[in-house]
Image 1: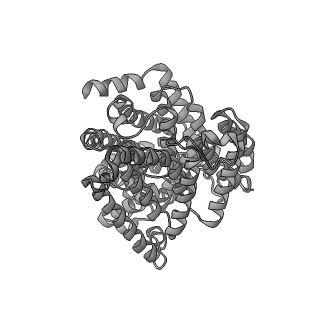
Image 2: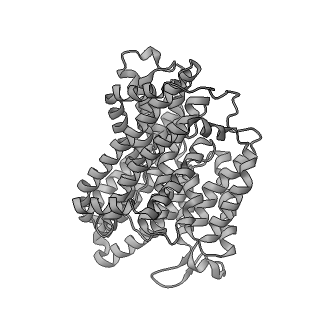
Image 3: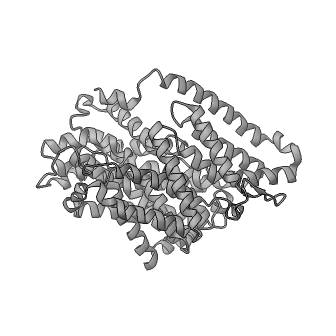
Length: 503
């Protein structure tokens, strides 16, 4: 195992791979600072550019870009009170009050250092989990993997919002999209409507680019204000960064506890970092010696928010790698990257391509350390990016959308698919319909069909009585029951975030 870990590190440290990772980090930094885009959207926009890359290089680009968006999002959270990322919202509660007291440097030093510590803790847990979960995954067969795809879809449906029906409808639409093309069993076109283009199925790339990237670009197009629209001004002089770094180390126990919460919540499909940050923040307030200071500039609250931010990314990678069940929107898009790079989650990632899997651990650690170092050095110039007007970004983003969709197969029809997916994405944003169930169904639909066909051809109907399938079936039933209960309660009670905001 040590030789595989060493081989993974040597591949990451190759000059070409490092340059690609630095490019991803730079893009992630800009995205993290500019509210409105987000890690999932940027992954969708950049996914087509991984064609032709080696797997380690592709993940160096994608992961390097994704994991630093949370770190960069902390900058605007602290300096302007505007979360650069949705997962950076908790950092506003104590970071911005510190800035208003003239302690912006201390706040940035604390949140950036805790982010790096949380990322390292999360990466270590990811490495240990890969080692422990490997024999479990290798013991599974096609029936269990089919059941796991159903579990993943069920989790996302039950946690997709107040209406499970909306999640179910979006999942069904995604499965229908996945069924377009030639039936692998009988060789007959399905849902092709006489169009030769549809014989090969609808490619994942234009769907992802449109559903996330196109929809968000249209949202930005409607914006008339600059990114930092609250009227706040960045401090002219930022000092005390070193003191803030020491604060993070002094609260090391808070960092570890918040990182653990981030990893655990990140592992649960459908919850994601937005939930993890509030759970971690609330727990830090409960255990603090001065809970009355939370929301007024508590360093331990800021440290908890920063540590959770990056640890949850490592947590969400665990079910994605092991079972093909993404922990959130970003890992659902990243699952599409697996397919582009020729990798299948599960047994293949834990056997044949185990070195690629461990490279993700190193990429997560190295990217975050580089990101924190750059943030400390270039804090003031980076904050000027928040003054960019929203409409100024539109031409370059539209170009990325078109190039990204066309790159998939060099076919004009892919651009049309991207535009249709963009319309669906805008409709989802407008009427509060979840997009992740649709994307996840498109990604997992092909896997589910393959595993179902293999299960039936190898075991007949007996695969339904296998112990693993029965256990996972019980998980599906329990998840649906839990989702119904939570859905009913959520319509009556305020969210944890709302409760915190009222304090």
